[in-house]
Image (cartoon, rainbow, N blue to C red; front, side, top):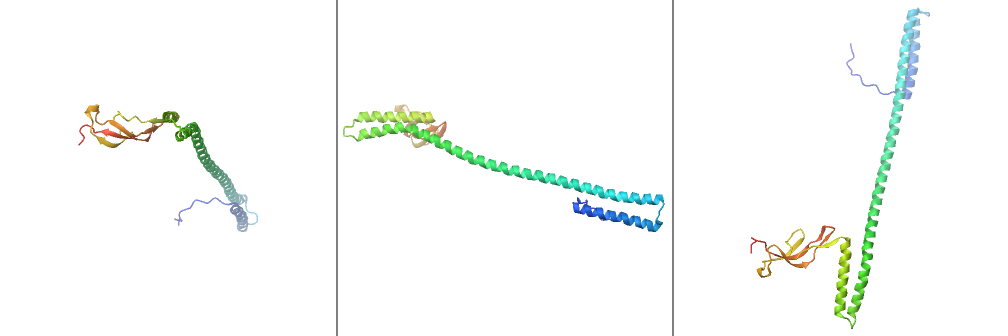
Length: 232
């Protein structure tokens, strides 16, 4: 009766298993020859002896192929293990390099920001010197108000030029159409026909607004005339 049990794939034989199997094969070959000699006499005929030798050769060949297969599998496994370890080592190194790069990038960015800020402060120093002199003159008993006003105007102009070079731009307001992306309406009133005011127009600025390199730094606070059709 045929065995209905499903065959499982043979496992790769280990070195000690292969050696044990080889020893058992040799014992089997010797026992097989003894069996034939007992059954057919000490000197079996050439055909029977050839059959025994063929069976022994088949067993030895099977063991040899199993041994070679096991050695090849072991070698392949060793190669794969080495490659895996190398990959893990490369991945660990790459991760460490990336973390080091991030740390260096943060430090470089911080250093660049500090250098940029230092440049701003350095450009401000002459303006601060002028402001300090103007305040000193203003506190004097012999202060000339016109001179102080002129000095303050020059200081303001110098500061504006310095910031403009750096990317600061004042938002136009008075006389411009109201733009909610650039203007903040703090008060709305009807347009005055006597002043030739138009609806939805900025007529007064409470606080200046600025752009920094084209982006809104802060909107201008303004007074706006009512738009046409707005409820009174």
